[in-house]
Length: 78
Image 1 (cartoon, rainbow, N blue to C red):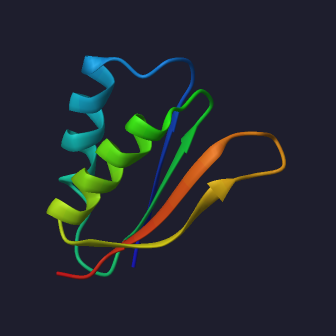
Image 2: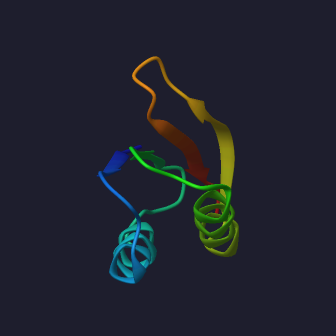
Image 3: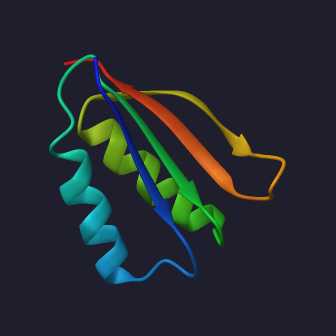
């Protein structure tokens, strides 16, 4: 089981969404994925969670860490 990580700093733009979608496409089943975001809106979170759901991920945890970054932990199950 591998653990993939992605960190995005700054405001999320269209190219960032494309990069996120492409990156989660390489994650295999039973692998973990964590994304960390420094500046995020609820719309950003909803879009990323939608990507993860569409690609058969189960979101295991999400929220703000002690550094103020928003994180999403997910596991690919298929």
